Length: 463
Ligand SMILES: [Zn+2]
Image (cartoon, rainbow, N blue to C red; front, side, top):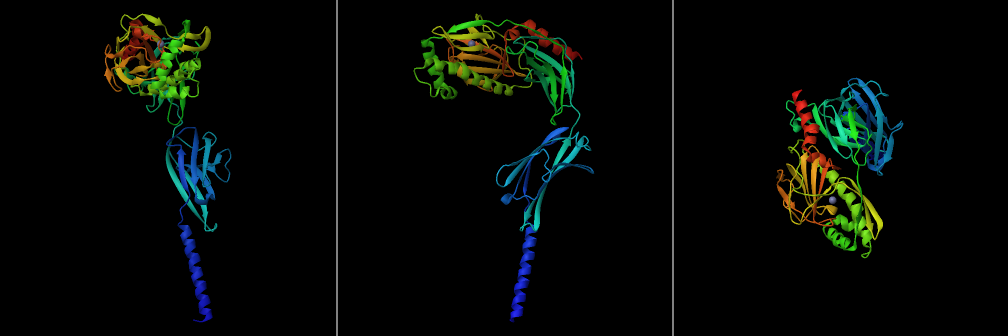
């Protein structure tokens, strides 16, 4: 082969490999695009949240467009990111979070739309580009839900509960009552036994908690999956209640009996007591009385989510037979040790005196959602009565039911005792509404049940 031929061969081969590399580069994978939000529904304002990942971290461009028929609305461009937050999550990945307001981006209408995110990366030293386009189906919703309150006369005692009947449309919204900052979910009215109720009719139980102001704002609310919200006022009156103040003397014998016993059964208690000297009984006690009480309250709020969407109870609730009320709801207690105040707590239940090992009976029909040791409550049973209402029985010596058991009013669920933070044998009874303690007196009272609940159910049924 002549020199010329050899040179020609090398040139031809080189040309082929450049073309090959160029073609190969054209088939290279584009960046990985992951859309976190919106998932499906978009309101007037929404958050665009997505990430782009690419080998080496070099990105040539990112665009996010909302497409509806012939209309194209630019939501984001890496070339002009405006107020978007662009965060370098790893060397190879960026995350883009941008709140957008369709009032400022005209052209979009209610109905289906497409989100198209396109990301481009340079390949072959920038001679070519590899791109990825992700399309996401969306539904634009701008119309807020509609709310109408049906029930009248809402009388709420401080520390007590009330019921409301309302209509809400469309039927895929979450709704309920909001009292100051507390949310009480509503449920389809059919679950309250309202006959002839359509999908729009709802029932919610709500409360004015003992530590809220008498003039706390109360409204029904509804929020659709696109974030559109509606609120409506309803007529209501609140009534003050006097909460007692009491002093409780705490002695060494009591602390020595209860603190190690709770620590033995509760991992949470052991963690709280770590590092406190063995002989510092007062600090140990206060840690249990304050911090473990707080942790138990958080657990009860979570447990409330397991409520059933229908009323399981019937008639008034039953108080422990022949019991003497030892303590009433929302007592403000100051704990004294050697005459010194060491702690203050609000006692959010009723202490009903009983002798040891007395049968403890379910106050009404329901389903057991907790049957185990629970911190300051010792051996404890919680019964769900539906629509957010639950009853708690504490300090039991033994538990006779299991989680998931359906129980009838008057059925034995355990035996009285003094486990947990109990000075002597008694039943501590708490009524919980969506995990918040409310006074049980109302639920024990057939007149209150008739007036506040049964009457409203009957009226709504007659509509
Ligand atoms: Zn108690």
